[in-house]
Length: 298
Image (tube, rainbow, N blue to C red; front, side):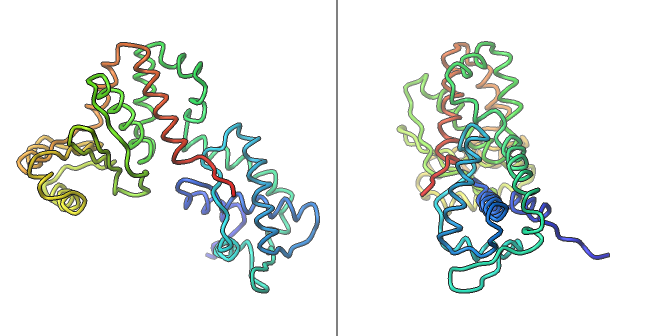
């Protein structure tokens, strides 16, 4: 049985491969939209750049925000689109839009924006709406509702786990006049994100479930590469993890590594009695997602 490759299946593959920005689908949108108007299938690199910018502005207006949609344009993008069968190179920095993208240009120019919106809504959930202070205040009004909100969204993606956990830890530690800083950006896989503090401790957040000593030994080996020996020996490395068994937790304690599970993060969430603290968590979540996902269009 022959697998039929269609523009929509290729765009699904583009979306699956997108980590923080949906660049390839946006470029495709710009190209098919331009072709629908001009019927010119040949694009210079400058033409692709211009079409990309137009599509970015279109998507920003369509979504009402700019999270996850665009980044700086590079001339390598034209050649990279060949992997999805969108373009073929005809000269240096000159490309041709290929069938069936030309055949389905009108359909795709209408379908792609809705599919990108669906993808971003699934990935980011309510995060884009947190830019409004009134929305944050409403969502933080009830402690029970706030707890459910964090529980619902914290485990959706590795980025969610890392950013939501950071926001909770930051708001919690600030109650004790302690500062925590997010030094690295979120990881697409399981490398995690490092957090430094003003009291000598470092946190590493990993969306992993560790239930065996073998898995724990592997994580410890990674920590030894990431942090100096003295910091580990002094017990100044804390691992924030999705889930960890009691036996493995003790194994890491014996290695002088403390751990905090997702359930313990959620217990901290339940202890935010003041609406102001709950609003702070939501504000930090939005600010960190914006730092990570906002479009930088150049």
